[in-house]
Image (tube, rainbow, N blue to C red; front, side, top):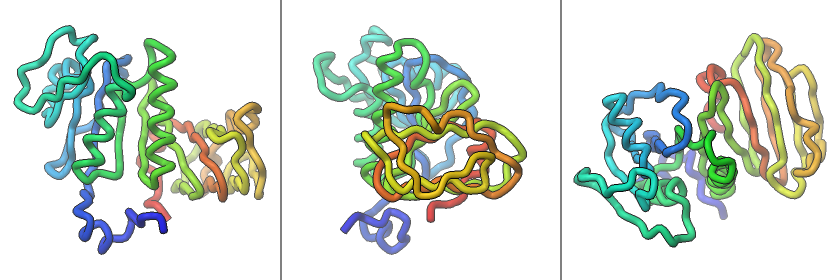
Length: 230
């Protein structure tokens, strides 16, 4: 049986946190638009520490091989990693967040720059989704998330683009409702971008998949319109 991270009794039993784990990487900085609450965790991945310090945002943990920062910081909570490792700095930060009990992750400065790092962070988002957690990757004006065998709903959004891509070889039972272009029980594959540039039309909307993982890309201002998980 899959863990039910949304069940409050389960969360209390397992010591899971209700806050957000913020992770700031060393990619392009398109703006840190958050102020962490006391229950949140803020992790700097390598040179993401500079961005946090520039914005005077508290940093709870710093982790990385520090090839970008080029020095091991003097932060009291620092984990120095070998440059020869399987995990990226961002994935290592996510693992620390999971160990601390977090199931919701907001990743900043994880796109732009090297395309391979952006692709790696997309896989991190898919990894979280496949393990019944949720990650949001903040890009320039857009947010990327993933859903696996599940559903994501939005409140009314007047306009804006929403794109849906299959991360899996194929995603079955894909249903899009309340959008300009709707689908019912469709199959999407990861070799045909039919889901690009759908549109919000000022209705409550939802995206669901019964078998597989989908990437969703939507405007940053729509993030506040995401309904609680069903």
